[in-house]
Every structure is written in C-alpha cells, then in structure tokens.
Length: 231
Image 1: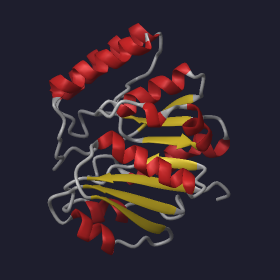
Image 2: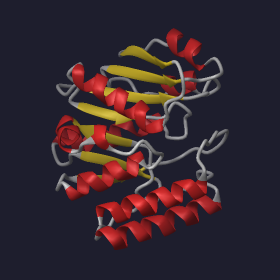
Image 3: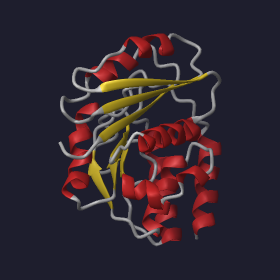
Image 4: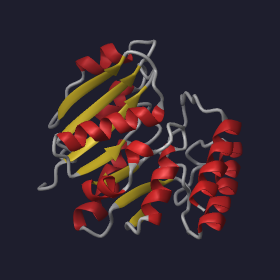
C-alpha cells in the first residue's frame, strides 16, 4: 500500500471492548493506530499500553482528564498529519463500528474517487444491528432536516465511522469546528460545502454492550444549530 493510512481511535472507559476491537482490524489496512485515551476512569489506558498490532505500530496518547469527543479527534488528526499520514480512519474503541469494514471505507480513497468516505448505518440495516428504534427514528428526522436545510442528499450525518484524505483535512477547518458530539456531522457538512467528494458506503453496527455518553436532546439541538449555521 503506497498511501500511509493511520487509524485514529477515541477511547473512553472501554476496558471491556478495546483489545477485541483492535484485534479485529484487518491485516494490511494501516501503518499506524493512534489510540487517544480521553481521561478514562477504568483500565482503558493500561490495556491500551499493552496492545501491539500484528502489522502496524500502536501509539497511545493520554488525556489526563476527559476533554470530549471532538478534541480527541482533533488531537488524533493533528498527530497523524504531523507524522505524514495520507489517509486517516476514525474507528471507535468500543466496537460499535466493525473494523472489518475498514477496507470498504478505504477503497474510494485509495482509488482516488473520493476525498471523504462515511460508513453509513442507514444504507445498511441498523435495526438488525441492534440500533434502538428511538435512535433510528431520531436519525431519520434529523438527517431529513439537515438535507432540507443544506440542500444535500446524505443518508445520514451522524455516523462515527469516517475516513478522510490528507487533502480533505487540509480543506476542512477541523481545528475550528465546535467541540460537541456533532463534530462528525459538521465535518461532513463542511466537506460537502467545500466541494469535496464525499462518498457513503453501507456498514454494519453492533450495539450490544454499547456505553453511550450522549444526551439525545442536547445532541439534537446541536444538530439543528449547526445545520442552521451552515445554511
């Protein structure tokens, strides 16, 4: 693989899922895994430091206190770009997004047909993967609102499984994005508005044992506010 692919992995209180998630990363898909421990209160950091990849390097960044989802990503992308990454894949440490789908996300980027690739749960079968029905309905409603306001046609803006090219992260001002849970959605909106090639691929999600720190009402209000800001 000529392109240098780095995986950025947010990790917060995922001691039960972290090692298994990393073990499922397919061989040959990345050069380096950057795990960003965001002030976990359990043994996440201890486990992360013991992890070694089969054919990739592992770097652990430790936030002594919880800084939040957006700042974890910003730190990871900044570090990856500094080390010369060409492609960066966001993969959560809790196993909700199946690592086996990384090659599917990488394919359009490696072929040069996309700048950003989002793994879309809505193009797959999210209810079969255990997505709670209220989340499914909420996702549909918020996505419909965002598409209407922004004049786009995305299947969703709320997936946390995304791959970015170096070009995309040079165009999208990710450092200036709001530090909220809707960071992923704002990145997708900004990429679309900047004229970058955004592609979606269907993915499977696994909700068993998921630990969500998301406040649905606060998240929904953030989604509406961000959409109106770009409108």
